[in-house]
Image 1 (cartoon, rainbow, N blue to C red):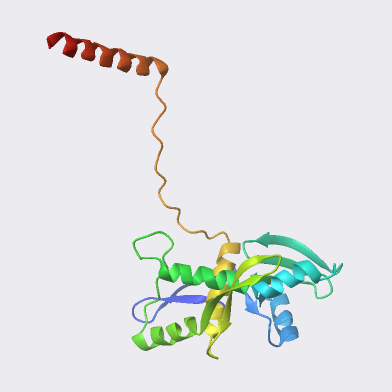
Image 2 (image 1 turned 135 degrees about the vertical axis):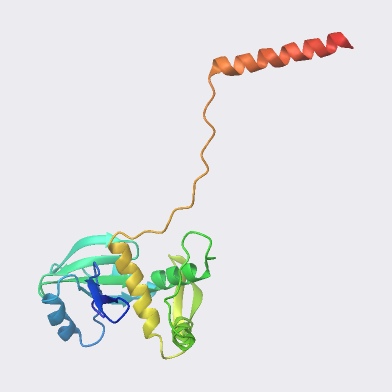
Length: 212
């Protein structure tokens, strides 16, 4: 879905809402996706990489002079492919899948919680099945330590892929989690105020001793 139309009561369409970005999965029919994205503003192609693939690419992949980094973000990079004349979003899928589940596990009264769209219960059930189609696995890798990855246990995980990609695209558009309210530190007191308090405390002590 490339844009969402707001529909008012009575079936009258309101002004369409056009998203800042819509990342298109280029893992299937890649050349066709590239062709579509070249003529669609704000719709770059995207591919998900596992944490294992990301590590191998950083260590073993030779320098490709036909690829130029344009932007590196949290768990993703936007790379301009000179031969294809297109910007490709490469996403650390394991990072953003963990991010999605952290949002779903956050209580609704706390910053960072994710709510579901209004829909019949069977649609939420279908989404839940996709979101639980993979399980989190921690694995120790020499030279890297413990890494977290997600492995598929059921075939249908398309909505999970779409959701984590949308979250990464939102981050690239500037969307951030609500920060928790920070506790303001007490203002620093002047030395003169501290001295006055000490004098007052000493005077009270002398009076109490004298009255005994």
